[in-house]
Amino acid sequence: MREFTVPPMATTPQAGGLADAVFGNARQAPDKVVFGRADEDGVWRDVTTSEFRDQVLAVAKGLLAEGVRFGDRVAIMSRTRYEWTLFDFALWAIGAQSVPVYPTSSSEQVRWMLHDSGAVAAVVEHEDHAMTIGAAVDELPALTRLWQLDADCVAELSEAGRQIGDDVVERHRLAVTPDAIATVIYTSGTTGRPKGCVLTHANFMAETENVVARWEPVFQSKPGEEPSTLLFLPLAHVFGRMVEVAAVRHRIRLGHQPSMTAAELIPSLAAFRPTFVLAVPYVFEKVYQGARRKAEAGGRLGPFEKAVDVAVRYAEAVEARAFDTGPGPSTGLRMQHQLYEKLVYSKVRDALGGRVRHGISGGSAMDRRLGLFFSGAGVTIYEGYGLTETTAAATANPPEQTRFGTVGQPVPGTTVAIADDGEIWLSGGQVFHGYLNNAKATEEVLRDGWLATGDLGALDEDGYLTITGRKKEILVTSGGKSVSPVALEERVRAHPLVAQCVAVGNNRPFVAALVTYDREAVEHWLRMRGKPNLAATELVHDPDLEAEIRRAVVAANTLVSQAESIRTFRILAAPFSEERGTLTPSLKLKRRAIENAYAKEIEALYRG
Image (tube, rainbow, N blue to C red):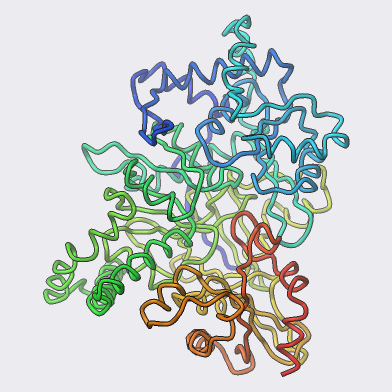
């Protein structure tokens, strides 16, 4: 087994819990702004540490008044918004545990998670969510309370707890220890029924303290500029929760944005103006593709693509210098780079709010060229890797030596190992202790202090990890050829017209693919070529679109042998989505569900 360890940069406290930071912040810096909260007019209003402490205290007292007790679990079903963070810390202040639920979850999924966790209460965003839980409530005897954010349950709870003394909350908070459970986060269920990952206060402390210490340039910003970030990741996902905890513990101004759609996200970034962002590759892809389409519409595609090439070569030269394999950008390259700074790169940064210089990307693989482009354009994106079971990041690229196309080195305090079969194993303070009510599943992944991730990867001589696939996603053709589909799919997805790609081929004579198109990109492509705006059923048979997708497939096939290549493909009229049950809430492909939903289309691929 090959392994690589990075020593910890921070130690986990021996006492206390996550809510202590809220009260400590208010004592030490009562006027420090730690939140931006958008009002009904979209204006961002400041919230100080003392104001947040008072709100946490009021909600915590209300929860106690309503019967929530130390160790109880309370579900939160909402989009990303300020009140979610408020409830998280109020629950932690009284020793209770939060159970995040994706707002798109079905009634059956909600029933399972609330039943399995034994949740005694639930906080929902609006009436639709209340009805989703209501449809399952007869099978949830432990559930006795339901509060609705849009019905101002914060004020309701604050009023209910008015008669409870602050000292009651204080006694609860002081009883919380690092090994106490903070939250139970259910996996997205790509391969079966979701499992509840039990994460402790210590898990979050180990994760956030080491991440903030190691990536100081990201979280501390530059002198004279207050660090801030806009959180648009789902708070039901562990990545979003890690960001939330890190921001509060380190007094980083945090805003919440409930949507990741470009139409809503871009204006919020412009108004909030964060200094760094934490996102999934999809967001950075959308920013890049939006800039490219705008350039093409303005007749400046040629100069834009030249600027992209210069940015990529500039970032490659900087990368080579960092690893002592090159002298850095030449004089000519620096001059070209400076020329495009105002013309192109500054406008790309403006799409992220204008002040962003750093980003952290996780959740799925980012194309190396895309990472190089953003770095050359002045936004260094540190790609990382982690799981719900590791409280988010287990590895990430270090600031001084970013190796694009990899997911970096272990987070301080973490060891990464590659087993004989290529599986990635992890150990460290952020690794969970097991699944709730599921000893069998726990035993399958926790082995002598190691977490067997199910992912496949490789470590280079410097400890940088590259993800090569997932054990359960390996395709085995009828000829016995094993194919890891991830690299193929990601290369096809790199084409600007492609939204998603899933390779198929288990027990089949060859590998084939189902491809969905990016509607916005295709509409732009049609306009630029003077073609009519075709309906979806017509588009999938358009010979020009088919030719474009074929180019993407041919490019992907250059990565593999002929036996592993995609021989044929089918363009689908509709994208994979949460609503159709073919994507997880974190935008991962649900392969089994896709193969079931498109069984006829897959069968047709093999009939010729």
